[in-house]
Length: 107
Image (tube, one colour):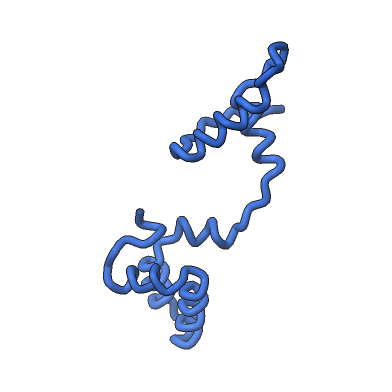
């Protein structure tokens, strides 16, 4: 059974979708291929990096505040987790975070 889902694409994602649809149908007039078919194929063949996806959509300030409020975690563990995030994000993004500028999750 198929599910119906409405999605919102960024301009860049929509360009990629149009490009793939055009390439798949170009020169084949009898092909009945819609955007849903292309999106399904893209999803089924994609390999996601879940760590990067989580970081892109995580508010680091809130994460730090939540960690600080927890009683079952030590300050050392918080520092270790934030150091891991810093190594993943890189120095520029971490500097933005501490200066109060919007980072990747806030843009």
